Image (cartoon, rainbow, N blue to C red):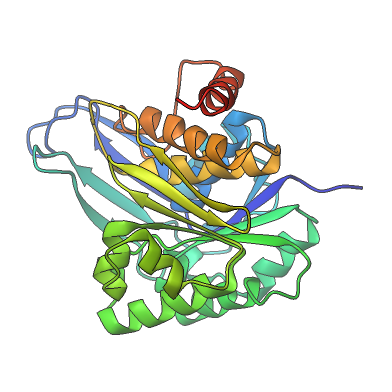
Length: 314
């Protein structure tokens, strides 16, 4: 029996944000939702039509139930995510502001910070075609870091992707973050990294320098914000310009992009179309206060538009 197209492994938390986009101090009503890099990617993949499961640990609490319900409602299989007895689900507040949202995390000692190799084995036992992870997870604890290294060991007979996803607030030492994230990225088959975070971590200032640093992965996708994205693959170098958008909230756009690119890979789209689909998904995410992508357009239309646009050379 074949498994899902993809499994995404990593933390997801409950998120509280003002319903009207005002600051926490001024807001009168709030929305409780779910956010997490890997579950965001899982939801984006499910939206596009990939079969996908999310593997993690949540607490045996009301917030854990909410996280499971929200991710499941997006079409993601959550049966492989376990509830930790007497565990606590991570939680954070988002405070919108004109110069960018600020967040306050309550995740120390959370259930997801106890992820281990056993959780990776559970993900692999589902026999997915692809396994996706991010740089958030190894920053949470020693067991999480070991689990990600184990997942990317290269001997599990499954393709892997790693979104560098550097979150400075999670790392006590920048040099350790740079070394750890570089070493993990080098083990993956596909790497996603923002040019800005690559510059902050490793001092690389061009996509070519990033590729030179990460020479081992089969594909390295370098995102340059509102400018473009470049993929280095065995078939060559491909660049697609970003799409115009009035940004409401930038958080989550990278996860949406990764979902679009990975779905394109899973269904066999050409390299330029994968990049365009990533941009289309990111464009949708940028217009919402939510951390995960939503769109009113039929997902099949997004895939067709990406393929048509790149085939026409636009």
